[in-house]
Length: 204
Length: 204
Image 1 (tube, rainbow over the protein chains, first blue to last red):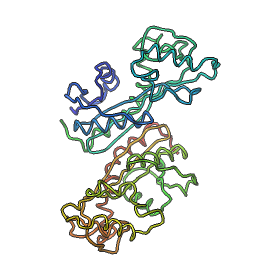
Image 2: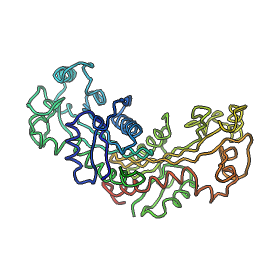
Image 3: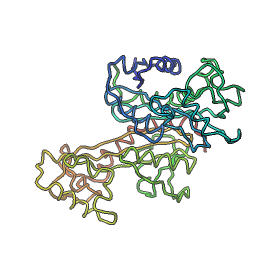
Image 4: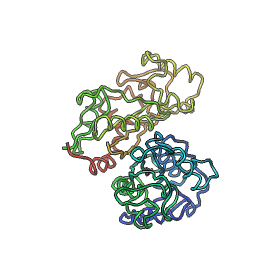
């Protein structure tokens, strides 16, 4: 079976992708399993640029078909911030709570109808011979005035899903994984990933 | 039949793509035919960045499946120059002859074995809903000491193909089109283009 390198050090993410891509004839592995210790820099201005940088960089390092993603929260009233800076919005060492506090401060006084936001995930897949695919998934929501819910991580407690009547952190993990921006991006990349994996790539 | 927008104002390029992609069930059109007059900027540092910018930009403007390419000459002894600046290497209004003269001056005294170079073409295909594919094609050659041949354009007269024993400008157009970097990129993008065109895109 063909192998697909997931460009992450996080075994949890690999498990999620195994689930999302289970109907493809691919054997998933990740950086630590194949012994890649070099880091590919993410210097892009967009999720797409970062996902492409990582997918291409690790495809070159590994010689394997490689998948990378980048994702974050875009708040319309803040011109799309925190965006690609979502995970370091309150500085490098800050906690989820500090990032949430900062975001709520920035949105103080902004009425509900202007607190629209979305989680966006971009997935890129690259081959060592320079072919590339990318697709994205989004989930639309509203930033609440205060956190609610115990599940998930990051901005989930202040991201309200009007369709569900709950914040992302009030969804059970299985439910979140079904509707998440990453699940939607994975669904959109599948037909492309098939073509990318099929041609010109050596079996390993 | 599904339509594919070729992001160019050049009918000659469209004819070439009609030939290269003739076995795909796509009806090719181009910017002037669909009445798009806005210009999408190319500000990238690489062929890939430029091809992606154009494909995504025109897919958004047109609402259509869109193909864009970017290509140029990379000379190893010049660290990959002229690269993305190939068509304006001797300034904005300069002629092919002036660009060739400049390149030969830059390579003065460089021995043959260090005059290696390649033509590279990157093709990107984007859908209005944010899916994206890219592939590349290259042709390896040697920069001659002086121009030879009357066909082609750009740097063709100083690009020697060891396999053919001739410069690119000494090849007949049909022969050049068969082995060109664009032909090779088109061949590589085909399976990806099929997937990109199939799913999630409306028939027009």
